[in-house]
Amino acid sequence: MGIVGLMWYWPDKEMTRRRETILTIILAVAVSLVLNRVVSLLAPFRDRPMYSIGANAPTFEWHADLEHWSSFPSDNATYLFAIAAGFWPISRWWGLFFGIFAGFVAMARVYLGIHYPSDVLVGALIGIATSAIINREPVRKLLAAPILALEPRYTPYFYGLFFLVLAELSSGFPNARRIGVAIVHLFIGYDR
Image 1 (cartoon, one colour):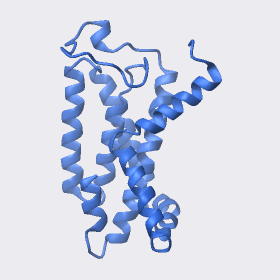
Image 2: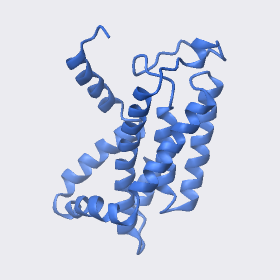
Image 3: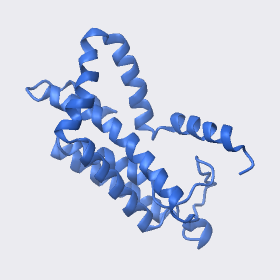
């Protein structure tokens, strides 16, 4: 959130374009996570390495936050690399910094046995590709410009909602995901 705040308020001639790109990053992360879940549901289920091969099981009790979802592809890698790829067009340094951060997080998840390297690689590719497609000029102008136009007219509401969305984004959309899981269980029940 700090990087987004810094880029959002940095005063220069690129401020409008940068703000539009930040708004498309939010959309890119959400779309990439949905695509990731679709791939996960279509691919054969893959148990996490810590359970299937006993690879570096953490010494602490670890609970998957999203029930027993497949390890493939990594939601975490998708999410972090989508953000890094979104930062790249507006600031190479912040994009590189966040990409390195995403790489370290991904390696840690492999080391802890939460994911296989292929889970992380495919997740990263989904995030990068989705972000690259959504951050194209026509898409950015079509989607982000109208939202950004609301900022001067409805400033308190805009920033209140923006803060809530950034809070969800910074933590990987946990509340939105739990609501989504609850909606799925509403239709298929809890016994599956």
